[in-house]
Image (cartoon, rainbow, N blue to C red; front, side, top):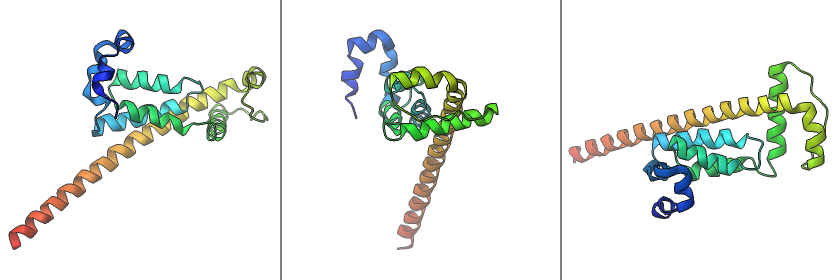
Length: 168
């Protein structure tokens, strides 16, 4: 984990975020901080901009959730996974809008973006937004559920050990 004091004393970050950087949830692992970080990171993974990590960090600071997890989860959309993720988002958008698919071959270039994105931007951005919300929410719920199951299991194990000690 990053050094909290270094982050807290960084002048550039303090100009932008002020005392929000002093929140311990930015680096702690607790149910609320981690589950919200999953929502932020998974949502931002579907944002089709090159500044996903910066946006994830800013949102994590604003909503006071785990910063490293939020930023790390953005890497779900990396150069290898980005084409299938964004194609999936585009398909979701066309399905919601009820529009036919525009045939294209994805190419990561400015020329392609200028020509092809003009034809598909509405279903693409809608699909990215909906996919980000859905997967972010599923990640949030899954982490909350797994954390709760872990706590219940730990409590049962503690009770079992106490009962075992009493019987000896």
